[in-house]
Image (cartoon, rainbow, N blue to C red; front, side, top):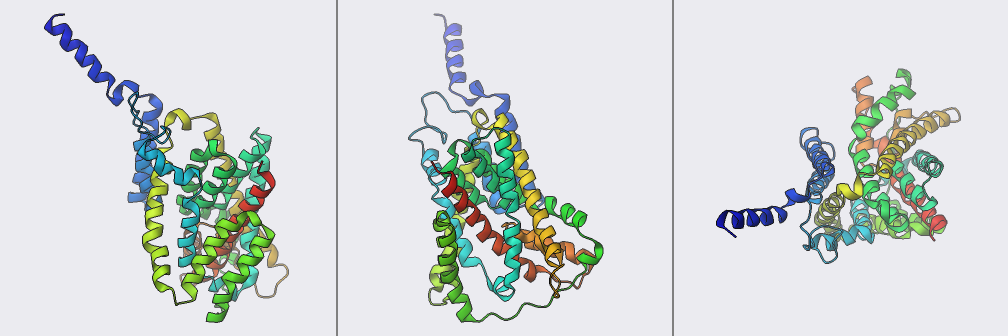
Length: 382
């Protein structure tokens, strides 16, 4: 073999050890999607704490592995595989719920308990989408996991899909977090379409003061009631209310601070990055994934509309009227959905502050989506 042939052979071998040899058009598409997520996070401030880790994870997950080298989340023994186990085994979502509980103030909900019904009404989207997924040919387990996207709760969607439909975990997780990030885009048109200007101008009485005793009793009592109704929600609800008790009892402030700051930040990074890494085009760009994204959008829209329409229905029977806009906050995208309600209200009346009222159905939506997940798990588990 002469020198030129030798160098040519070595060059060919070198090329085969690069990612370029295995690149497919699907990988390029997914990398562009990852870049889009990062752009939306940085430029538009759409859930940057979620979209930056997910977006970069999508880029990482679509660099083809070299044969014989375990690098991706699908390769046994790889580092990314071990990180992804927290998603696959449902470890990360309860830890997220612990942090959410330590950050959440249930006072607004306790001051006006009837607003809990708006959080429950928003779960209609979950069960209607479940039925729609069944019609489209998904199994009952897959349909249940897809339906929960309508709750706009990424950790709950990941937890339920890891239990019922692990084969759809990546698509469901990306869809759920995508719609959470797009709350400021998706919800306002629906809110304006379903309400009149007169309704959007409605003012509500300031919430009453909730005592410290009530705030301490609530997580314990609510946990017992919720898990008695839906035992399948025990893990998520338990961690949520445990975190809230750490916050409200005031004697475990160090633990509450750790849960709502350092711990939830670390878990969010690992969860977002790992989910992104699971979106390799070979597994992700499928007909099922496209249907999941479509069903997720429908589910989220129905959930938003259901909360608004139920608030309008309640106004037919109560003397103290509810601004129907706050019904849109019944999805559990906390606090973004409540913030969007507030901003839409301010456009009509710069002095109408709806944020505290909207937080009531918003936190109720967190409970509602977890309970819905528990019900679906208990009914559909093999």
